[in-house]
Image 1 (cartoon, rainbow over the protein chains, first blue to last red):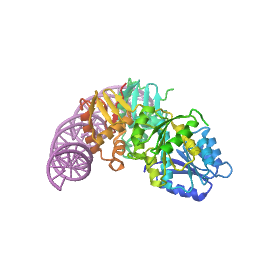
Image 2 (image 1 turned 135 degrees about the vertical axis):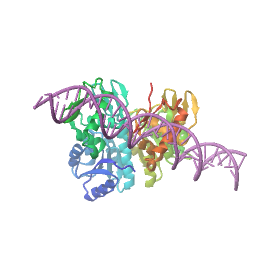
Image 3 (image 1 turned 60 degrees about the vertical axis):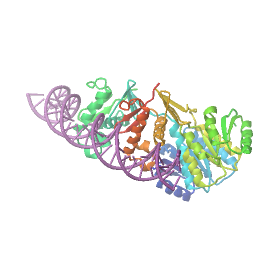
Image 4 (image 1 turned 90 degrees about the vertical axis):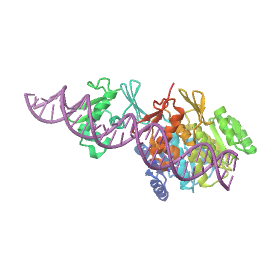
Length: 230
Length: 230
DNA sequence: CAAAAGCCTTGATACTTTCTTGATACTTAT
DNA sequence: ATAAGTATCAAGAAAGTATCAAGGCTTTTG
């Protein structure tokens, strides 16, 4: 269904199963990381911050339930358990340890992917938008809404894109070509006049006094930078 | 495990199964409401605001998938599907319609309860008001009735879907392709002309003055967004 | 079964907003 | 004072938007 599915960590001691999952999921646009043991799974979760974990129950050493428990001490990432064990007690233990779903092998890859989509839905729907704030400036990049001292501001696509890139690298200096490249592609990356016009329009809309910028600072000879404030 | 488990709506046309579930879940401290048909399920969800819904797939009339779809138009309440059908396609359809889990009969009551606990862990939000209001606009997403300043308005299916998606993401900017995808599927997501015609028709029906929209704002170069008021 | 009604889709056209370009003034450092 | 870089204004070009109307499809009705 949806391409660009996100990042999935596959934990299984059997190489064949990892390969099967990697192939199937990659084809659907998921980005894959693999781990073969429980310990590896824990470090891989920290390092690669997956959007979902597929976890085999029967790992050597630290088993799936224990891995789940350890993960749930600090993260809410969706976990889907795979297992050959049909036993109800096992399912209950795994789910109560914090797993989101439990699937017995053999399973259909279509069903697994449907359950993955279901598990990942929870995360997005329940978390409110991350909002960038600096002084009186607020940028909600999910809703695409910009406010200055509580008042909503209307920006053109280019102006908004410019601001979005500045927010993305807030506090850091962005060169003219970096900004142009991110906003209008490589073709325009030398047209700094164009950038200045758009920047002027953007400032007129968000700066209380464009002559004395409060948010977007000019770095002469280099580019611009968005000020970070508490 | 947990007593005082919350409020569960059981939807099944077989009285025996409803009774079995009611008995088992009541013993665990859950408060139970029952429904025998899809239509009853929809009204019961509004009236009793359950924390979780157990939904049989094979209902007479409106089936479980359709009930799920209708519920997901406005609420995120966890839905666990029960079914005698093992077929993978059925599972995928139900999960993609918005169900949280799918359990085939016969099932262990212990597993069901573990899956219920897992499903309820996700939810932070309560059931929202199924009637959206903003200024003089009222959208009842359960009965699909739209009113402007108290007057009922007749919308075509496409117009209603468009409005429903706008309501679902009220206050947020929706791009043309997002709107088209939710309303007509991925095939049409580039046909922005089509979107404009429908949007124009919708506005003619709900906006007092389509030249100066009060509800549906155009975000030039991006898409549309439904205004939130008080 | 045919006619009518309603809806979706497409094309044409007028309209609005945004982008780009050129001209001009300003700032800062040498 | 000059040169290089920066900011702003204004106008034409380009892109995006709103609306009307006609044709085709499906569903409802007589």
